[in-house]
Length: 401
Image (cartoon, rainbow, N blue to C red; front, side):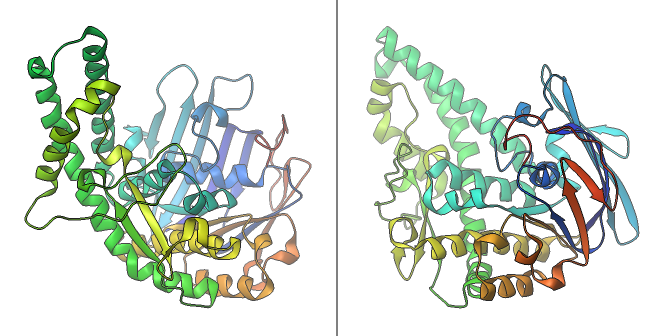
């Protein structure tokens, strides 16, 4: 799979952009603050329905306009698709494939990419919600149906939390909450499906992660992913991302659904006291280990960087193994500046086999020469080679990076 043309309208600092792309490596190079990341961010959004920089879609819409459009022409085995999304301030986003409307959450069916950026260091050092988001985005990329499962789970979770808060404020006794039992069963059904899918995904990532870490670090530090499940007794602190609890993934003879049901019964009184659902996939985490020690708190900066990068490369490898539409587009946003010469060469070797790789860099010399064959230079807020792009840089780095 490859993008042959990217078109932007009112996205970030671009009023309009028409950017042809080639197979193999494509390098966007220019000083910081020119909009390089904006270009690759738009493609990342098409495949994950999210940004690696912000949680709010409206931040990607150019100032003083009501909508932005990202449009990409995708090519695979002689077939071309025109995939586009319109981000709106005052209404739901809209999506099209070949000019026919589709549900926005179906976009990952048509385009797949894996993006790595400096922000991804938070996968190792940040709070649990970041790791949950990473796993869930990959779930949706592998099987877009899970976008609906995640949305339904979030809806049921909100309804259940509303009921718990209402019961707390009104003083309703535990035995008189029959409605809560109904929401419990729906939460268990959706949550168990999500948990089983996450566990399967983490297991499938194991071998690609080991290989990817070795390819970018040059050493085998035995990277591991160990799920921490609250329904199995793990304690996860979302406030500071504490990962001190033991990894708990299974109990002999007990299904995920039954474990979920038992956990809800155990914490029912605490939930009524706090007005909050205390166990389930919305509170779980994944423990990252190197050499049998938690990467968070023990790994060096270089090891943490290698782990995060290896996670993304392992994700790309898993997607390419399972895909019927070819390799995902691999995006490396401002990565090479963080690496020494040896690791730059190793990374260049690791990504060389992908159908298309998009790279951003502030300094051309940071990128190995074999990845610079198709270079797009960005200066003063305009893409000047190979095509001129009308752009207006507004605001600071958040708008024009």
